[in-house]
Length: 418
Image (cartoon, rainbow, N blue to C red; front, side, top):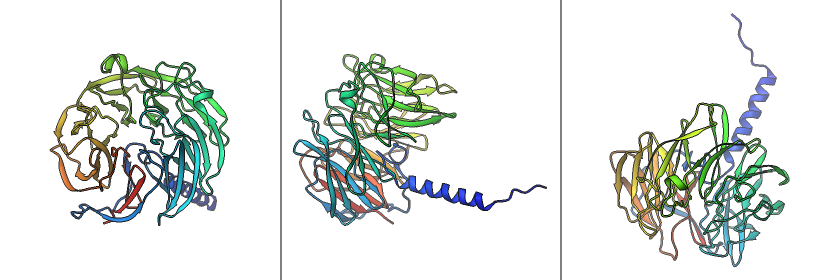
């Protein structure tokens, strides 16, 4: 019998691979490592005291925003608007500010608060300003490495509420979707911001959806959502594999959609939802991933902008009744069947960690801990964030067994370790 021997070189390669994997695991992006609202932390509390988990840190007078905080190597990064500028702030876990960097002009029309969550990898921060400037920043000192005005250079067109994209990274590129008559999506070299490719235009203007990288049967693709379409794009060349017109077939009012939520991918299928009574749409990819067709669609889970998560074959999130109201919903992934719908204060955002759901309603700031179950709304614990002005729209995040909650100009950090 021939036995494989592990050589010193193989051991070295394995160690290097593990080190690289661990390094990548420390990097951060919008709504968790897979952009699906799931955070990998375990060993978390299974219920909370009546007043909520212990508050470890409260930082005030940050820039105002709806973006999520990001934590890498025990450092907190958070974007916000101060006066007319977008500002990125780095804080230690003690709340002390280490640097602040102005990275662009903020969106200056409706809801001008900063909405782009920083994407961080290998000591570099990638973020887009409210008027479309893409910036790479040194995480150590807050200085610019490069910047590129993708909105102007690629003739982007924005929707009513401006630009909210959290940038996506591939092995070589920063992915952004200016969207308009010239192109739908561009890839910039991570090292210097130079253009690697730009795709053909597909119609529509910018939506409020951040890109998502998936792999299906060996075919990797970027999911890009415009104001009208969802499409699969080759991350190496920008080739459009497929394009599904959502607005004309599954729109609301005059065939429009208000696309805001990053899609979910699972086992060759993609769910996308828009709010405003526009049907949620389940797509099924072909074996090679080069085509997509609609599997089912309905209005059960028309998420406004709070995101959704998939747990053991069921979707969880909040639907849209009107701009100020919505209920919490469980829907079967495979069939679209509604399992339950529950009124709990109001609609809001949702994330998942350690087998439990964390929900954050947007009108009064109630935060709930929920057991995911298709049999009903099983609230375990809840507490209310102290009252402040404006909607509670920032999605929560979980890092190092801590719950990070952002509202307006304030950051709260709670200890949720068991």
